[in-house]
Amino acid sequence: MNQSQNLKVEIPEKNAYTYDIVIGTNLLKQAQELIEQYTKAKKVLVVTNEKVEQLYGKDLQIKNSIRLVLKDGEEYKNFETYKKILDTAVENKLQRTDCIVAFGGGVTGDAAGFAASTYMRGIDFVQIPTTLLAQVDSSVGGKVAINHEHGKNLIGAFYQPKIVIADTFVLKTLDLRQLKTGLAEVLKYAFIEKSCAAPLNYRFFDFLKQNRQEIFGLNPFIISKMIKICCELKASVVSKDETEKGLRTVLNLGHTFAHAIENLTNYTLYTHGEAVAIGMKMAFRLAKLKNNIDTEYCEEALKLIDDYEIAPDFVDLDKDSFYEEMFLDKKAQNGKLRFVLPDGICSVCVADDITKKQIFDVI
Ligand code: NAD
Ligand code: GLY
Image (cartoon, rainbow, N blue to C red):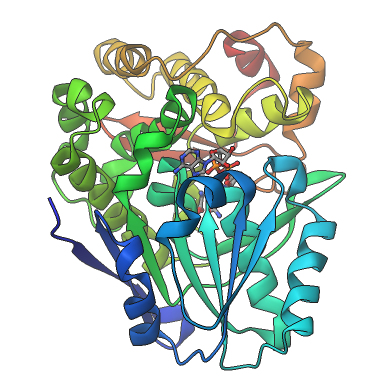
């Protein structure tokens, strides 16, 4: 399948700024043309990492480009990498009208995007996401950041790309663990569908139930459709609330638990998606405990998570440390924890009235 699909992201908060997400196969070969169409860049700084460069570097040929190949890993989403990107931009005399392209997973996209948001107070930025997680989530919506030694994504900005080019062909080299990491965010969209600004009545939940084999087999039609639905749901939320003053919080289902899990295990034991999947299971159990949802839906949702095998066994963490760690979550307000919790079929709410005992019962 060579046909690509275009989706628009509209950001009324930024003077009705809009950009396209292009989803399809063999798009790397068209990237040069798309970048010319969507930016005025004379020079392009492509930021990627060693693995992506080795796998797909030759497929992304862009005229007048400089390539910065970073080391691979979350631990490089830091100040040093940020400085390296800026140093490269300065050394190569990138101008305001030039462009930074992020070519890689969420780590590359977040770091390159943050550099683009600050170089000369912001230059054009293009996302070419190469992991499933990046194609369904991190490349869309403009959150860009680097980590600080005291917390993940502590230094960042809201900075929207000029275009997102999601080539589904590259997903074939993801290992199963990375595929499942992206699928955790995919399932999240099924659980929040009705709370998005444009519930699309896909019953995305049913789509995921029915197409598991095709998804794991990377059926190009089903994969493109799945990515498009996720991006449509995310775009609908971001267009109503770019800077997470309210609605955008729904995208954080499972994340209050997940961030604590990631922090307590020093980002070594679980990928982000694995932690989110474990966190979503906890969120469902908490919602059931509070009688927000009935047993049937809770069991159906937990079964979907189990059928996709996205949540690994959870190591026993000290419950008090876990509880304390959750207060570092960016959603916590006035010393109160806030959770996104299921409150109906494919619908969620934000709750800040959870007791310590209830949390201890589900972690
Ligand atoms: P990642 O960027 O580390 O990529 C995962 C691994 O896959 C890496 O080893 C990478 O080199 C490799 N890889 C990339 N493309 C590949 C391909 N096509 N084939 C084979 N291997 C490939 O991790 P990720 O899961 O993409 O992203 C996680 C990051 O995204 C975290 O830092 C998280 O904080 C961030 N994130 C940001 C947002 C946002 O809205 N900005 C949302 C969710 C997550
Ligand atoms: N991944 C959560 C968000 O973009 O808001």
